[in-house]
Amino acid sequence: MTAERKGGFHYAYAIVASCIAITCLPCALVLSCAGIFFTPVAEFFGVPRASFTLYFSILNIMMMLTLPMAGNHLSKLDSRKVLSGATILAGLGLIGMSRGNSMPWFYVCGAIMGVGMAPLIYLSVPTLINAWCVKRVGFFVGLCMAFTGIGGVIFNPIGTALIQSGPEGWRTAYLVFGIIVLVGTLPFTLFVVRSKPEDKGLLPYGAGEEQEQAAASPTEAATGVPASVAMKTPAFYALAIFCGIITLNQTIYQFLASYATSFADTLPAIAAASGVVASAAMAGQAIGKVVLGIINDKSVKLGIFFGLGCGALGVVLMWLMPSPLAILLVGAFLFGVVYAMTTVQTPLLVRSVFGSADYTNIYSRISMVGSLMSAVAAVFWSFVIDSPGGFPLMFIGGLVCMGICLATSLFALGQKVE
Image (cartoon, rainbow, N blue to C red; front, side, top):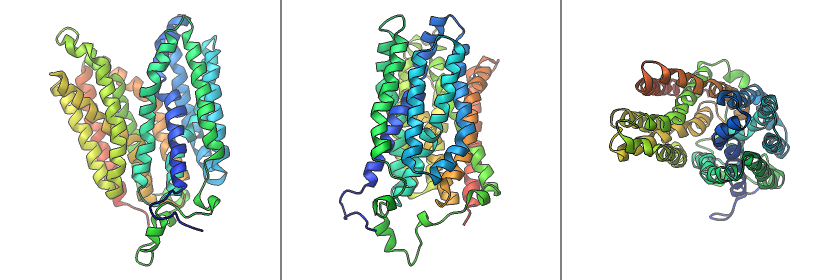
């Protein structure tokens, strides 16, 4: 086997491009763009918004239930088959949504998309990057995951324009989104993706440099414990708690626009900028994923402190200093950084604690907790906001969540399994 020419092209870059296609298209179109459909579809059928958005909860529950199977398939089967099959389910699910005429139909489509999204959003990027790279892993994971947000920025306006094109414009938007997923992603998953470098007769990206130090320090890519061992350790449960709580904390993002709107009577300029506040958080998420990846390549512990520190500062600014608008936007941007930890810090923590040998199976099981939390987090924070404590209680809850995440992540790192 050969490594890449020094300074030349390595096939790992094609893998990174494939991961970007997966996150920017199916992941963004199914998940990041879901919200633009909630109100128009519910109004078209004359049902409460909750009746329609139930499909999204079903989607998350199906992701949770199928993650272990997806992790097992991705670790044992050809990645091309698994990821192409998942892409087809996501694309057909979106196309199916365009044909919906009753709520049960949407629920079935949500379930189909949930099965497809499980390997795409949670497993594809960290699994492929871990297999293909032994250096700059954090940077590549962060870069690829940033495109879930970038895809949302690109396609939310397009989808909104299609929805507004006519009384049933939402059908057109779903159909177009489904076609984009299939046409834009399948060429990568079918013809570019390879499970591991050996499939191309190559060594992983950076392996040449690592081998020069092999006598003194074996490469991390060759180390690790099986899932059966990892699941019996306290570190596994600590990371499962981290995954669930960081997902709960992330969901506060969905209520930032509502928080800004709550100032309609006292600070109308803040209320009028509610969409800008949400965009600032989305920008923080996209940039934060790349920055977190770079920091984690230097130190996973530093990545933890950086992400949670930004998040805590962001919450304090939004809560205690909502005016002037510039400070609120800075706070939202900083909160976007801790939002980014959900899909960047979590997989890198799992890799750091348990190694890469059986990474996919371990991470798929830990991700189940995050997927389950996704199904209930929005309802939880809705109850919090509607309580007498209101938005201040939500922000206090966010700070508590980040404190729990700090404790569980540092505990897991201290229990690193050799």
